[in-house]
Image (cartoon, rainbow, N blue to C red; front, side):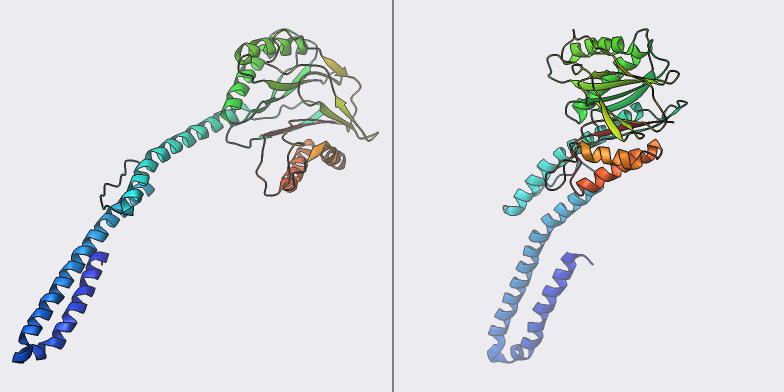
Length: 351
């Protein structure tokens, strides 16, 4: 039963009850005029109350109906009411909100598509390199981001696979677009003749054309694994050094090297560095600052020392276990604090 009919029945009950009480009095002559007047007053009050109820409930029913349409995904819903009171303000606010909500929904759908595209740009499989165990992942703090890792042919100065980790300034859609551009340049140049230093130099020249006036840039660590000679060669373009851990000596070393971030100076000439004599049990970790610069609820940073301790404690385990141990420790450290930056980690273990 609708609200309108429940109100009507209630009013009729309250109006009929006095009639039943007054009827015996009306039959007496002296109460006749008074009884008729009372009946007229009751009827007027009943009709007035019913009419007021209709005026009150009809706009509310319209508003409820439009809200129901919106919940079903109909963004053409509009509240067409004119009550002269606060309900008009509510209707105007609703009518202004619906187009904005539709725009936001369209943006969310576009971001979901962008997220799927960017996730598909990351390597679907980790390459199998004899003598090396590799694990890698990227976790974005938004639907899209600027962190990046990839695997390429090694270059003329190496027989193996190159591992690349990059970090674009900022995060979100703008960072994702620049990351996608850099990825295209890297993949196109990596298959052409040249050393890894020449590859990075060429990519920087191309990327600077697109970023010079925007102020955006990308840090990069380009690591080549020579599986035949068991040698590491790398180019550092403004990125945090890779971490090298020797479990035999329990010593950490940072794979440093000079190099400007990509997209800053198109004339910069990058240089390669190398490390000889890889042996079983050594661990190399590449990452982005979303790991060691993450904060807990008190504002304390995760830091590289915690990162080192996790590597040391898990150095005898597979690369995948080391990677998961870092991510779990990071999650436990941050607790309920929302992820502030993209996180990328690549773990390479010498077998």
